[in-house]
Length: 406
Image (cartoon, rainbow, N blue to C red; front, side, top):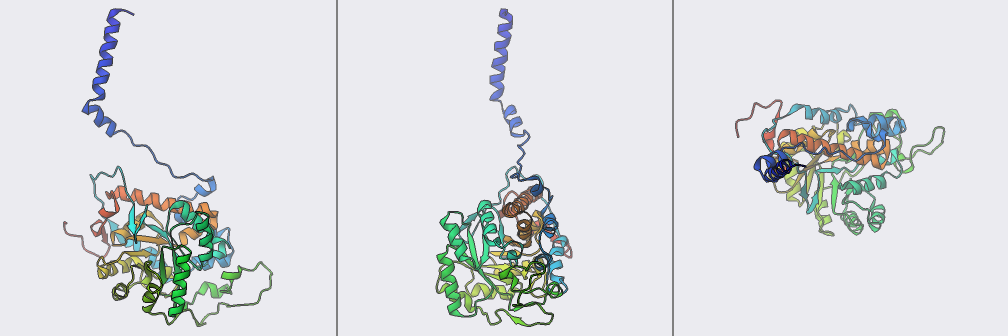
């Protein structure tokens, strides 16, 4: 190698060293294409549904018709169930641009717990119809996914998971606590089993009239015994009949919050609120959070859609406690709209039950993965780098005039 070649190489190495410290190179590195983040990979059949909605069709092919209709159906004409979904199509997003969304943060703190994302698993009826071990499977999926799990009458199971260090953060649910002794027994038993709070469903005074169940000659006892095999003879326990009147807990009152607080310092969440005056009464009665809910369209038909009810409830609460909501959520931008209208977090019910029915534990996890990813994507495309940046200025409801500059 000639002296000239050595000199040229030395000059090139010096130039490279200079450029490494150059602001130009630093800017180019900062604007380099980001790494693609792929979700957790499962078997091909689990990954096949392109969105949460498509899990329902997979589940429908795998479960008994009575189980499918029980979970999928609403009450009577299913007006409220359809309204929950339709409400999202009436809310438009007003995206921001030129906002740094290279990192989108979905974390939050809720009732003293730090969460990675604002999606909780609702208490749901009928899971045992699609899988007799559904509560445990869903709990284990929630543990893996770091989701808050709301569940009824499962203290014994949750104790076992806690002993195995596999228990998620969970809230103990009840749809009926008609006496002080019952409420306090429920509170103590749940706290001893490791729950982090109580979620009391207030909107199920009577078993509602579900046309699908009536047509199918469904028996409400199947929730405990399972659906009989074809040709199996069973003694009816609580058969569904049109126009039947079956009380659940018609006497529950606001006193239930005080009763629970008399036995536990854990937070009480009241679920089933649609009216601003009920929201105010719940807070004044000591609730530490409320859930705007119409029971997924499974209680009173023609009850208003939860997304429509949410803003007035949020205004009535006025920041005193967190407001959550459920009902009709199937996409990440559904969640974004709920957050923009004032929800602190959302709960999902049918979507994760379809995931469970379709593929078991990994089906639940995949449903959560999809909604989390879609929420991050929606936030990034809307110019919302974190949850605190989301407010009503992001949305306009279809019947409202354009918002003034803010």
